[in-house]
Figure 1 (spheres, one colour):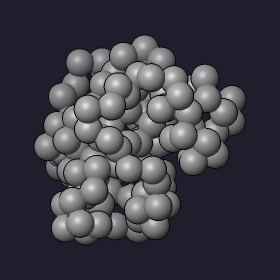
Figure 2 (cartoon, helix red, strand yellow):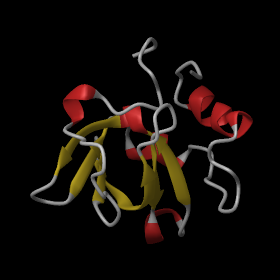
Figure 3 (tube, one colour):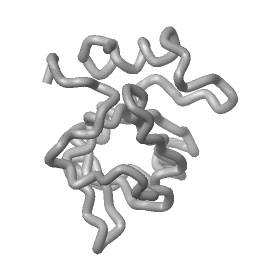
Length: 117
């Protein structure tokens, strides 16, 4: 995955440009983590912001688009390739901070162990 664009949706995920994922449930490899609060499919800057609700005290986390394994439209669910602990320990998404700021995105690229593109 190191050569894959971290901010791009995987071709095999089932994501189609323009799909509205807000409100979809998000499933880690080992269980539910929350719902999609916002997302973007901008070229080179695709991500989800997940509202984890009471699971980790209302924290919002940013997941690069490449972490999406599969989108199940019938059940309004996004499946991601990370465990609950990996997501829980991710840097917190800061509301009001410009998500497309390269230095801000760099911390997520480093955390998820992929080079920043």
